Amino acid sequence: MKKLSTNLISVLLFSITFSAEANSQKSQLDSLHMLLHAKILMLPLLNSIDKSQKVCNLIEEPITFKILKAKGFASHIIFFKTTISWEEKSKFQFVYNGDLIFAYNSRDLMIYKITGFEENDFGKFYNDLSSGNIDYSNASRLDLKTKNRFTKAFSVENIDLGCLFDSIKKHKKRLPCEEPLIRLDRLEGSKGIHK
Image 1 (cartoon, one colour):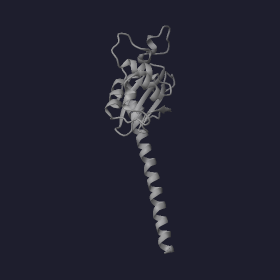
Image 2 (spheres, rainbow, N blue to C red; image 1 turned 180 degrees about the horizontal axis):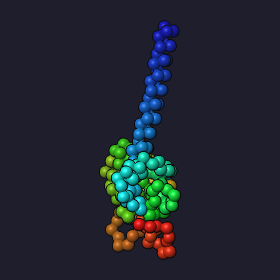
Image 3 (cartoon, one colour; image 1 turned 120 degrees about the vertical axis):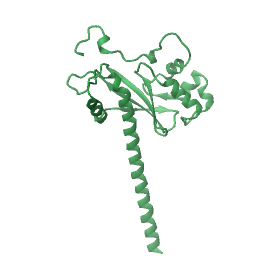
Image 4 (tube, rainbow, N blue to C red; image 1 turned 90 degrees about the vertical axis):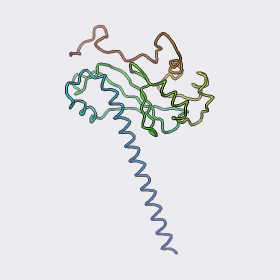
């Protein structure tokens, strides 16, 4: 009996360890997939890509990012921010300075451009949230109906969700949360960008 319980404990410990390692590997794969998609979306923001090797080099290059705190969304939704800039000594010069914010659905392997881009994907993100492709944790379908309820049920660090909620309605002017990063060569007096 003692030998059986020892073996059972060993099997349980092995399966817990194996499960933890598998979850850790899945988490690493999710992060790699998330960053790969973000890098692909960042390619048009580079100064120039004259060789296909540069694309491969950018894909291999690590990027720094920060996971943003969020409330109301299920754990398979990850919001993250990366900062791009023109750096003279870098292998990759971006013609923009500023933050890009993404949302990543690790369950469906989808990435959404939230802020910093010429066109954002918040409308698609909201539609996926409304249709149930994205789950929420402590919210209900009713919380998706009005801006007030939406901003009480959901929040994300560094993101004005109220403005983004307004952006999905028809409007004539760009809202502040829809403003893309400005090309450095379009800024008055900008120096250092050579084509």
